[in-house]
Image 1 (cartoon, helix red, strand yellow):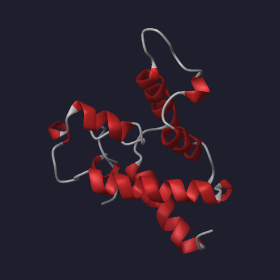
Image 2 (cartoon, rainbow, N blue to C red):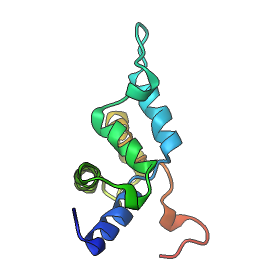
Image 3 (tube, helix red, strand yellow):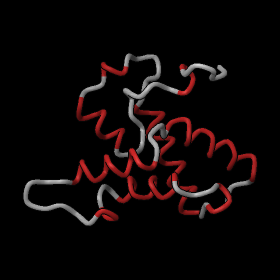
Length: 120
């Protein structure tokens, strides 16, 4: 597994980019997978990566597995390449926003940096 400093940095970056709570992501994955004719079981809603992100959000850092760390790296890389923090969130199309939300990032959600009392 990654060394402690690397894991700490990855954990912080993952939680900075994945700005949805586990409850928000769970609800989104269920909504996204719900169809008129069929609806998956609640614990099977969403993509495997979305489900893995949800599982990571519900864990403590000390409980991470090697597979969790690999998913965190992939999600961070994907979100960094597909989000433009300088761009207005409204500039994202619906399809792109939904794809990002399936990984736990809602571009329309205010970032922690802009919250009152948050340090820059």
